[in-house]
Amino acid sequence: MEIVNIAVEQDKNIGGHAEDSFRVVETQYGKLRGRVSDGLASFLGVRYGANTAGANRFMPPQPVTPWTGIRDALVLGDHCAQSNPDFPVWLDPGPASEDCLMLSVYCPASATESSRLPVMVWLHGGGYSFGSGHAPGYSCGNIAKGGNVITVAVNHRLHGFGYTYLGDDERYGTSGNAGHLDIIEALKWVQANIERFGGDASNVTVFGQSGGGGKITTLCGMPAARGLFHKAIVQSGSVMKIRTAREASMLTDAVFDTLQLKRGDIQALQAVPTNTLVRCFDKVGAETNTNCTPYLAFGPTVDGRVMPDMVWRDDAPDFVRDIPFLIGLNSDEVAVTIGFDMYGLLKADADVAKLCVKNQLLYNYSVDQLVPVVRKYRELMPHLSDAEMVVRVASDIGFRRGAVIQSELLIARQGAPVYMYECAWKTPCFRGKWAVHGVELPFIFALDEYGTAWDGEDTDALRAAADPENKRTVVGRHMFDAWVSFARSGNPSTKDLPWPTYDSSSRTTMVFGPESKLVDDPEREVRGLLMSL
Image 1 (tube, rainbow, N blue to C red):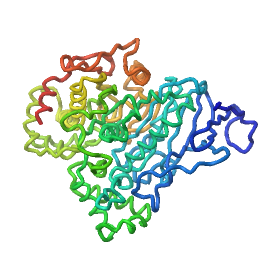
Image 2: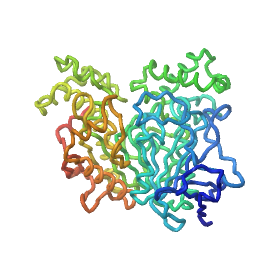
Image 3: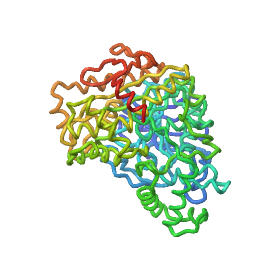
Image 4: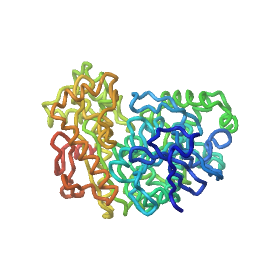
């Protein structure tokens, strides 16, 4: 089947600029019309599953109904209904609903069916509770155009819509992982259709940050995901813990109780208005003791069906043995959640430990457990202020530890190569400069300007003033090129930055910063301390 280009003047009923043209691609369900503009072909709001509202709520994704004629793919699709507390750069201004099984495809304008370009599938952050693949800070089109690859941004069910466990009823046995089943359905769509857009279905990289990285990490425990992707990039998302059915059932009971419904009355739960459920899920996530941040309270569940067992507990999943991984973190991740609390009175090690416990993401460490850790950090890093100390300890426990464990389990498999990175680039926010959670995203998505992102007061002007030599442009190019190189070949090395694999002898890590460089076994003593927890 040939890709067909249509000049804009040939169809006056379609919006667009005179310099635009349109491209028609035939998918397994029918023909799609996308827009070609400024060197990029975009197909927006492409449905990969049916509406998940009503009787489809909590069910596995249902198939798309094929259509005849040409369907426009010119407007972004809905993202999952949610309440999103984030800053504007991470907020999708478009509509939100349960009709959210939508993806968008971005291609270089020159791509044809015979191009067989690498494919990069983006899974957004926001824990498992909020977010959208189409937030302004996620410019998949920039990657496609600048990297000569095909990119796909995926929306799927989140929060209780995607992760309410109703497994006591066999008909809803997979409901605790519905959001992940959506992602698998999107990856199946990619396998079936991406070559018609110019992509190579045998060279698919999944990449995600924060909750998106966590989704990749946990997808590895689902046999149905086998063969749907060939490389993986986990950015600040090495979240190892998956809920047990017992933990998930506790949340489900709280949902029924909050709505004053009889426990187990799923039909009544399916009839609750969408916005009422959003408020309920937020309340339950915040108030139910699940030993984690509310944004991760609802999430993947060991259901004995599509998620058979705990993953990453003792070793790496078997099916990832042949999948190259690029794994990393940012130096000051938790500055973004601790915020200005880091400047409170932290007179004793216990004060620091208490703030770390308050801001731990998924682990149930006590103050007594962390006081010796804080004391050891003070010995190793006497130059750190109290604010820097609490950010460092909480970030290392919440992010560095998981990234190291995941990398170590993978290399123990002695399979495909593993590469590790740390982004140490510090941006002005929270009355200082921090390598906060998500600081690498503007680099990956080639965004020179992106407005307020971290504390409500940061701006492009502040970032420019703090970097008079414009070194962030160099860091951005290094990271962008490395990500594209990895997607292309499974190796992030570039002509500017050769990058050896991570192994148990040298633990070589690429540290991106004002002077990006390779470091062998960075923070060796800290690594040993974290592994002892």
